[in-house]
Image (cartoon, rainbow, N blue to C red):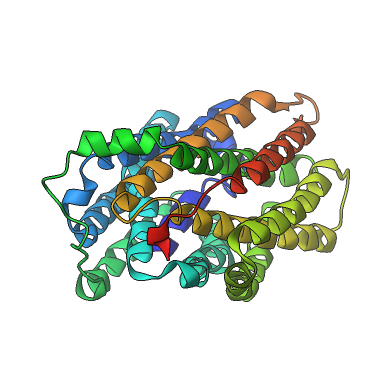
Length: 383
């Protein structure tokens, strides 16, 4: 199920140039297609934080997934820009809930000392989506049309619902309908430690997504890659994540969440700066750089999200993780829109201008995240 959600979200990245040509839109308008999903996710996740702990987590997750699947089907019939904009917003309304609820389910079931490995296993969906989902979608797009990948993801989503109804466990231990929801939310927002954790999550995604949103158009327009070449970036990157994610999960649990995050984010700066500054590169060199980018970016996200799950108490966890999820969605939408405003396209060469500026911003935000990570306190309930 997480694989379907990842593929749906990532589809907008490799098809960015194709959508700009199809709808005759600028990078700024394209960024709104990415941002619409994330803004929808922010609104739904924040709203859900007020009532989600009054229901079985399985019920919430399956309901959101059904409506997400419908939204994906809507995208497959978006033959004009404005309908696609609406369809991405609708899909985001329910796709945005999946991250927070799935993390809450894992946090309820898996102890904190083993949660790094558990989050890494969930993150395998990203690797598989990159190896299989995105390349297959590009292949389908090449031999049919740009909308068929969304239809296939919608079909797979409905198929995944069948075993989910049977095998997902009911989780009702957190339910307490007598609690004052508004008071709890207020306490979470006023809690200084949780404020730091939420700001940390928002900034981490902001810096990363501002850069990654436009990497595919940058490789095609600036470095002269073909769309088929960029497909290999996702295959190699996804394979790299799949082969390393379990080791990284164990590394995080062994070394500690903060130390491992610090190492992984510093390493992630190297491929980000290199990609944004090379003038030309062979496919093999570009694939090698992208592989390291995928590994370190995925690793730092696993370390960060594991660290964040330890900040709230058991009572606060469900609502906190949905607020966190809503801020991540808002961060993704904000990042793509800011990136679209910074980037311009040369009318003659069609090159994207100022991508190096975005890389500097991403690194600067990453340094702030290192500072914040060291100041997040872990709740006793986490152990």
